[in-house]
Length: 107
Image (cartoon, rainbow, N blue to C red):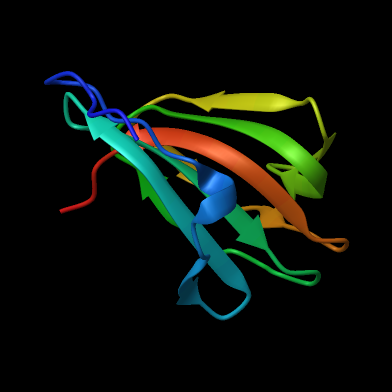
């Protein structure tokens, strides 16, 4: 395998295991740069997320399944962008969902 040039990270998400993040949710951290992270999340059917504030912008793209976010039904190919300072109070999936997100590294 080739060594990545300095400042670059390459990952193969298919070769990575899902890391449990809580009841009904798994994550694959794909890379980080400039204080931001890209990760894939897998939500099990029936998952309901807790209310939280977005202190930084966040971007998500639905890869498979469906979810409802802020009252909007989203399926594969849909995306959302969240402004800093907003409240996320409706996030759930009946069928299960896999999405990719870019967000500020927690900490």
